[in-house]
Amino acid sequence: MKWLALVAALAVAGLVAGLLLRGGDDGDDAPPAATRAEGDEVEAVVGPTCGDLEYGGDGEPGLVVAQLTELQGPDRAVGIQQTDAARLALQQHGWRAGPWRVAYVSCDSGTQGNAGFDFCAENARELARDEDVVALVSATGSGCTVEQLEALAAADDVPPAVVSGTATFPCLTHEGPGCQESEPERYSFDGRPIFARVVADEDAEAAALAELAAQEGLRRVFVLHGRDAYGAQVAAAFTAAAEAAGVEVVGTEDWDAGAIAMHGVGRAEPDAVLLAGVGDPTVARLIREKVRVLGPNDGAVRLLGSDGLLRPALANLPAAEGLLVASPGLPVERLPERGRAFAVELGGGIQPESMLTAQAVEVLLEAIARSDGTRAGLLDALFATKMEDGLIGDVALDEHGDPTPRRVTIYRAVDGRFRPDRTIDPGDELVEAAAGAR
Image 1 (spheres, rainbow, N blue to C red):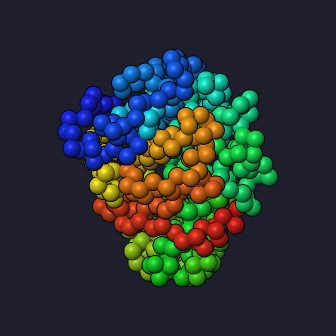
Image 2 (cartoon, rainbow, N blue to C red):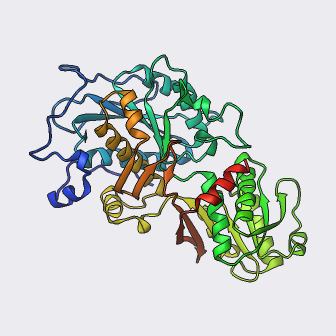
Image 3 (cartoon, one colour):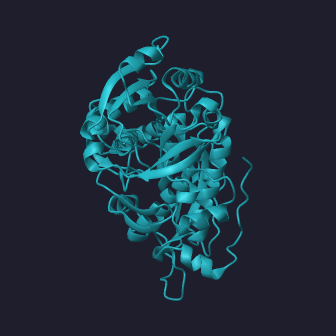
């Protein structure tokens, strides 16, 4: 994916007006843009992998929103697109949040060639020390977000608020059987939550798969899962949500435990097989074996998959035809009009993660507009978010920082590509059942 060029200025005034939230209105009736104190100017942000401070509005900015993104390694192209999305969101709001002028800085999580997260915690610590930084957009996976939050929770004073469109680990916001005893409290500052997300978590993903099974009339499902924490968690959460949805799980096996005998799966007489985990060569083999033994995926025994299977290489497998995969977020074609217009402005090949990152920025701008410009004030405003007409639609945050509605897209493998089939907002009963399985 190529670097997506930023648009220097919006060309059509009518489109701009339609895209801006009320809090970003820069019309004649808008109050003068505020800074925290008269003459208090933002200085360069210090971070081990942070870029230059960016600001495209009038006057001098008084607040900074930072973004931590993976800008190296195999996910570099998506990371670049996410930073472009964040900048465009700020640009379309005139670099304003109500009365506040807001600058931006991009920081690299620095994960290339390293099994850990080189700069996740270090950047977070440095950003917390910079009083101009009131918020952090976490556009990384859950592992890096965990390190950010642990570092911020240990800050000397109230840290920046963190909003993510990509971190789906359930224990970041709520407890459950699979969480550590210290979760999610250890991601809070002085007992106060500092993290929110605009993306459905893995419990909602599992609940959506259970609802999908019920919608399709699948009453007996065999679950195969990876040994990784994600695969095991989704499998357990699906099993609990399936029971609440009236779907029986007739067997569960770890696909890494040894050769899976698909004939043995067939003896359980399932209506469907669920593959829960990350797409890898094992998954490709299982898909081929499933079709060879149990027939096509749109036949008597269907094939379902978790988000980890949403890989172009798997869609290209002839045996994957008809596979249904659940993934949090919305593709561009399922976005409301505002979101589609934003995606056109951003460029081609837009990924759901980039739209969710832009939505995270908008949630922060809307909360900053309702705040007094302090970190504490922003946290108060953030957890009271009820935004209408966002880039992905209406967005509200509950007291834990989780979004409603919980949008999960079901993709179907058709002719070598994953195509959107439907969107599911799983009910509270199924999500609560899934969470209780952890």
